[in-house]
Length: 603
View 1 (cartoon, rainbow, N blue to C red):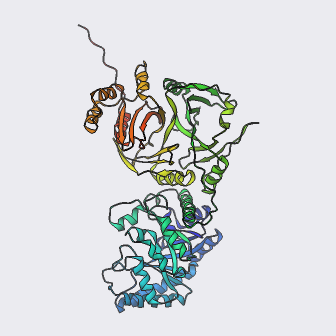
View 2 (view 1 turned 120 degrees about the vertical axis):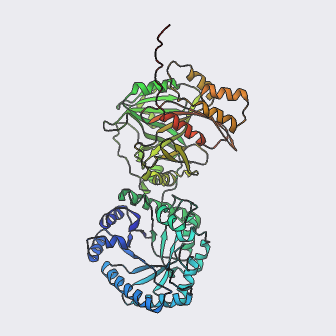
View 3 (view 1 turned 45 degrees about the vertical axis):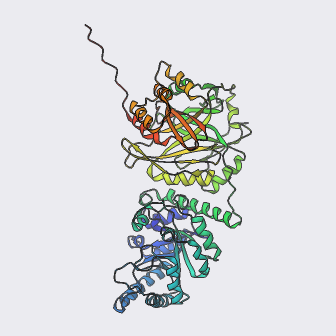
């Protein structure tokens, strides 16, 4: 199906929006009236620019507060409409979107609304223009799509149809199954928007919190499946009102928008049992490695050594060290000279049964493919860039080709067996983009979003994982106005965290994050674990959590640059990430290092 987007969905001037939308691969645009009014170019030039970019002007919108009005008001509204029709002819748009009336002066009279909409459609037909009537969720009298369809059917004009908008339908809790009662040729436009599930005024919800399909909580797959069954042949058009998108880079927003439609089409094809052009998901089966770039190999290597890792190899041609313990593998490379931090997480290796297919799917979903120089005899290693710039390598599960250039010795055994999860920090304008990326590209399923109290703001976090828990990610968003991104961390799965904590506490250098005593006083109130266990947790600085499936013990190291390590032990089938303990951890990380005690004066 053709793919379109309303210009209100991205930032910039109208010409900048058109260029960004075209680069992302869209077929058409809805021109939002405010964008045209603020553009110095006349409509003819906008039409030429769109045609040059290969974009079809799918609609001009919105035309407001027209129907069910007194006769004297109708004459003025028709005069206003005639002016818009002339502008549309110059613009090359043949579809006008008319919103249901929200003004206090309109009548609750379906027959009157139908009669006046028919007159509008007759005038529009004289200009070769059709009219799509949209029921706004906050319309004065018409606020559901089926009510809008009844009025359109009553008007009985071939140039008058409905515009279906997923937000207006799903925000009201309307059953989208009724869409199938509308003939496909009477659906003139389908607008798509997702949204987080919020309890708030629907108008404010719509104006500020819409997002792309797959980034919110609406069942757009089910809704679109109903629309497809009608025989609808128009475009899939995104209409997104979002404060963040209005400030973000138009190019990456447009790419994110296109990715959302590609993924949505695939999910609908799965429901309808039709084929999809998208390569099937080859879900990752585990972490092959995580790569840290650092200016201080000695300091970070010392921390890894304290955690039980050993330096097992040096890359033959690049300044990269391999550190291992069990199946947990960490690469240490040199930080880029222009990097603002001395240590950061720059790459993740994901095990895949079919790396080439994983890379092909990522590329089809518009992930930038990373060009890599391969030394003679070095195996192929496909890689793409995630939204935050993290490099994702797809590694063959059965053949560790990435490890061959290290000529590495066997890794030591220890309590740490593998990487449990990886946490990535994102600026506010990339958080939803990242969630959609990992969901669509890797097939990871999102958990519920969590808001965590940070001493200097409110940090938003969302975990994602595959069904088996082989690959887990947590995506963290910086508080609004934060000067730095959230920390990154690598969580290491330990099968005896108590023994590990005892060993680390016995080291001469402090490598563990101190946990305030107040945390353990509160822990006694939250969980009755017995006196001995509570005393042990406090002495070792272990944090604790529990869900209906099992228990979770964890501790954190000091931070190096942006990175720290978390040691975790899942007992039973615990599924969470210790989120309730995150505020304590964040407060401890923000706390200044204790000053040395002053020397005594003597007796």
